[in-house]
Image (cartoon, rainbow, N blue to C red; front, top):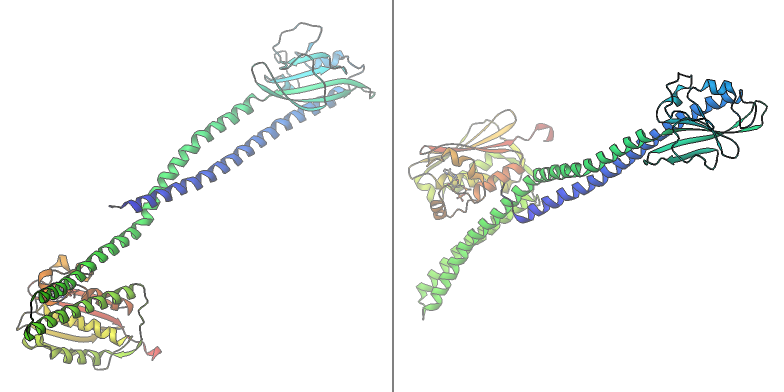
Length: 449
Ligand code: ADP
């Protein structure tokens, strides 16, 4: 759709705000998810270390006799254990499997220290310095490559309860850190991609929701332009007439009368136009004061046909009515509006029917509706124009219609009145043969009478 700058700006702003709000929401939920994943993994690492160190601690304490000295049974129970005074291969875990084999996997280490913090034995690869200040509990250490290790230190006691030294169990956090780094990258790449996607979706959604507003805005603009155009014609005619009269000195009585007649005619046209525009705008805003009452359509049709029959134009055209019901048909409605509706259709029929033609107004009913047919043997309306004639200011042949004084609002007003009365207005027409306009109004139900 062709859109103007204001609508494009608003659409862009809506899409932008949508992207910002969604971006903040996505970032927050991403951060919360990241923290939760990090926490649960960390918790799992600590739990594993706690359970391994707890089992080792309980197993070993019963075997220890002398502080700072590992009994041969302990050394035998931990294949691959390298004592401080030995030089041994740094590859643990190949010398056999122990029940606590988990510490013999790569990435784990087990260290024994005496009470002063001097290393006694090591299983696996220790990442930090050979001696460390001993503190019971958790510690995170880093090796020279920057790999982090989580370590727990526990105090060991001999079988008789004398402090023996310390045991440290640690595991590499490489897997944990890699996992979190991957998550972080996913977040960093996914967030801008998500925001771009949301921005695009926002732009599309904003366009979709603004389409009806834009169409109605365009209709209003068209309406204003058409109204201004229609108002300009009588205004210009009055000005030209007055200016011409001003140039003539002195004005004869006949010229004065002619001038006044033109001004009065144009003024009447102007007043009618303004009144019609006001009526339409009030009906649009639903501020038109509708005085609902029980209306008898039989009386309305008969009275209108009689009234219009006396019009000059009606003289060469046979205007009649046919009441095809035996009982009076009642509808709830505003009598003045209903009268305007039917008379608009009859005057149109009279206007667009050539001399010698016929205009018949038929009143009948179906189960729940009263039907009024305004039938003429006039010029007819081409199928392509049949939907457009109800548009404001639309005239099939503007020159001819302007000559008849119509601004193209008659059918628009008729449609609006029918809509207010919850009815419908349709047309059936054939070019050169005539047209039938059919009003359908809900009958007043007996329950309400
Ligand atoms: P207008 O003031 O021009 O009559 P309307 O809204 O009443 O405006 O009608 C719109 C157009 O529909 C008219 O200009 C005319 O071309 C066409 N029209 C309306 N009624 C008839 C009819 N009975 N027969 C043929 N054309 C009609």
